[in-house]
Image 1 (cartoon, rainbow, N blue to C red):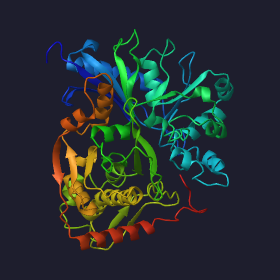
Image 2: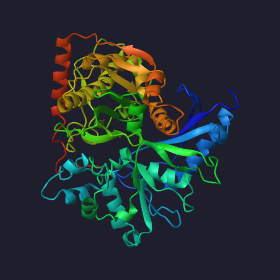
Image 3: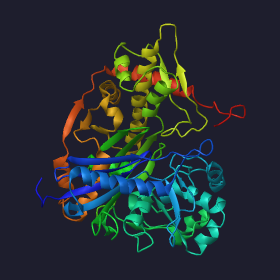
Image 4: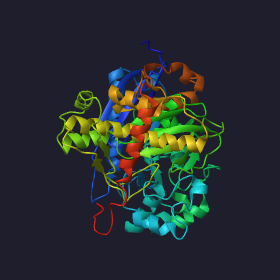
Length: 509
């Protein structure tokens, strides 16, 4: 490392921890700072974070990453931010104090508000405008809940004293000075997750805000994913450093995976799974249960769109086997057990713990283990649980192919579960396309770093991202097509057994 060498810092404000990762010009990791923060569950189905704690962990991890790399702000060309999307913060612009805890993307408290907003038109009331079906998942109904339920919040909002943002916006505002001139803006990818932005014009819709009861004065300015938004505050560690890239976490991973061509797709295997397919510069409305979202926008170039399919339960199913059923002691054991048997013994696990997400969107579904016989043992059940992630991904991919009219030629993968080689091979078999894992699997932070670095000329553009991207391992399909069809048919039969479980007799929590 030379004294003049420059780097880019990415802040990854995630759901369970905040991380800061420093990258060099080759896109390699130099150092990492990470700190977990508190998960708050006040009621069944409610999930909150303390925004003050998020900001404190951000400062801590930035310091840790700089210290480990033995550099300071003078060595940083830029800072990028990526974040848990949809998680909603409302704060007072005069004091910097949040009026309530951040309501997390997983939080389901706004189901009644959503029902009310549907009116006679149903969940697709705003889909043509914002590309999304009405759901408690997105930020709009969460803002409304805070204004309706926190004493005095609506009055303060209407007086112009309150600001809203997803966590990218909250971190940026504080990084750039907070009450002393903090910048209140977001990027197109985060704005596209609120239900309040017109997916075509990339502007807030006054008529939709009015229906939601949200004053326009609360909303941040919408900017591209790669431009200078502001500079580090004078009394922090990043004094005068350009903050110049923002992407929601799944979009950042798509960018970090260099999915720049129409039809390219990535799947992130974490707590859940998120698959995004680049659909080019025209938004593609979904007829098959997917979301239309902004993928990225570089400066004043046209925005690029994506189709997104979200799977609620993936890695968390392995945690459930470990913690709730005690079938395994640690996650790595799942691969050993799965490969100790030649197949799942006719057993299928459908983890519809809180309903099914894409492409079904059935809140009445609940999880099942089907096909049990005396022959089945814990190895079969563990194998079936891993296979469930691959089957769910196939369902999302089928929907994407149908919506986009583009057949996927390969799937780029990242996230913790990609370490499981059995799962990756089975995924390739079930999809019938190569599955490719890159050398740098921290693609979320990397995507934010690239967006920030491109804005200041540290990288010359997307071609540098393509050139830096390097393959670690590739899995090729090897299962007979007839066997794939048989297993997928049985999977669909298993899914059908989960439906209509929740009724007046069944508690929903």
